[in-house]
Image (cartoon, rainbow, N blue to C red; front, top):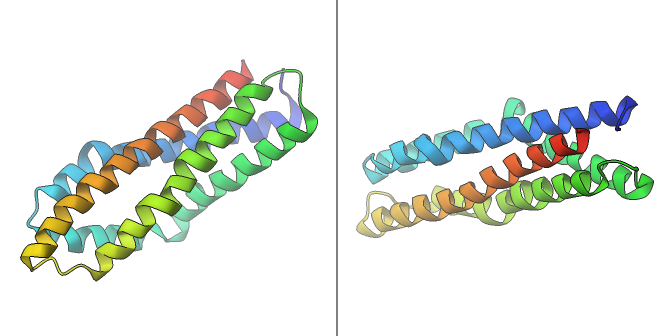
Length: 159
């Protein structure tokens, strides 16, 4: 059984990944739907405001801190190869680092950057907004599932 500092790191991994999954789930299930129902100019303005608020310390500590924690758990697990939970710990780390953090970097952030340049008042902008909502939300579903699966995998490592 996992114990000592390793136990603490794993429990923090469960909590961090689970909390991030909850944030992403909220976006997938109701925030993006609500924004999509707004006129494009209002939806774009609201999403840009949300994106600016997301890079403040409270969320970034949770999101990036969880990535750092998952990286530490993955490296320590790979180096120590504990008797219990090795597969679950490595899987949890990979799920969060690639499926949540990695997808954010390669799929969601570039869409957010493009959104800043969008003219939502034009017909092209309105079409771009609809496309943005679909694509961003699709990738957010991936982040949600990956974060939740990482939390589950870490939890299984504790059993």
